[in-house]
Length: 225
Image 1 (cartoon, rainbow, N blue to C red):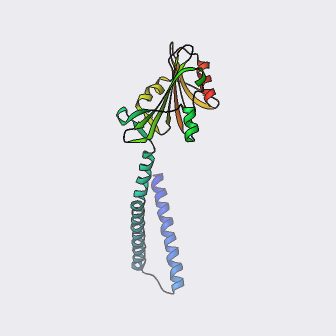
Image 2: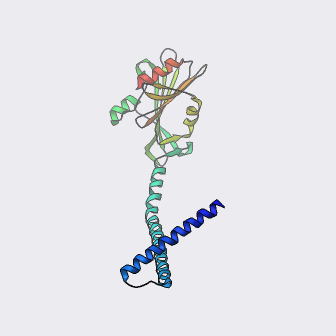
Image 3: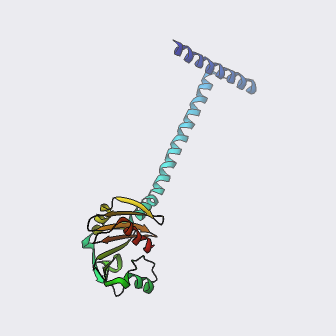
């Protein structure tokens, strides 16, 4: 009952406001307005509002159609910035120098494990796209320590590239920490260890085929940075 009274009150207020407006309009015009005139005016107002709504909707659709190609282009460009490389996509070639000398030769600034003077052997390979040998997918350097012949492996990719054979290394590194403000993922097992991190646009994977403590593993990264 209370709701009905409220609605009736609102309707009475609306009717009273309309009647006052009609009287003011008649006073200004100098003649009385018929109910038909008022109804026609209201119909015209509704018709104008309807056409305004139609034109506004059409304008939105046109703007969307114009903008859509640019939106799709940006999505494609974003997608092109990342890639997943499978083993059948690349091959390897020997590098004529280690990564340290590669930096000097090509003006690069790749991080490397500076244990060259303590190694019995260093093998460096470039893994390149089969369709373009100038497209280096990742670097691989293998160091054999002089006294123990323990093996250290370093893989380097840019941070836009995911390589199938490196995914397992990253997934095995369940622990996280910071070394010199750089986030690292790492793992230590009985006879091996691994650590993964990103730095200035490149991703580094270090694996060790011998028993290693956590602090020693992190020290390798600290020396690289």
